[in-house]
Length: 189
Image 1 (cartoon, rainbow, N blue to C red):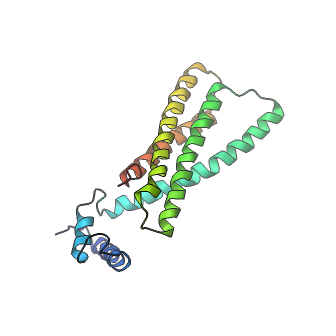
Image 2 (spheres, rainbow, N blue to C red):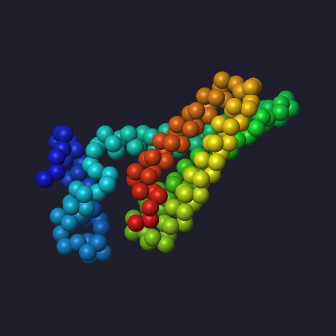
């Protein structure tokens, strides 16, 4: 028996099961009835916590917005600084790379979201390249983060605005990667 904190969670769960039972070919899943689908949800890693779903959605939307708007803002800032012929520090370059690598994660997974939005019955061979790219980009994120921290310690002239941007990027990257790993965007099965 599944436990719910209120009736609205039960209603959401029933709607999801109804949708899956009517839209997924149960023969492909080797399921004979909707009880098998319910068992899949009952024992899934993610669980049925509605608050967790809402928080994941909020983090995903914030991260996507930040990582899609951030490079535009940095490009405008770069053009303004170029006119003034201001020299960019190593920290500026590495932290910009850090933000852009977060943008790469967002774009890679946004394309993956769209592919699943078009067709839920994707094969592992179609999803595997995106998952491999996720690992490569996370490796790049780690290298740029470590390099940025190292450059931060060496650079004395970092503006408060740049520090806040770097910290916001770090927090959103960590939260976004956590949400993606929680929803199995780093595993192909």
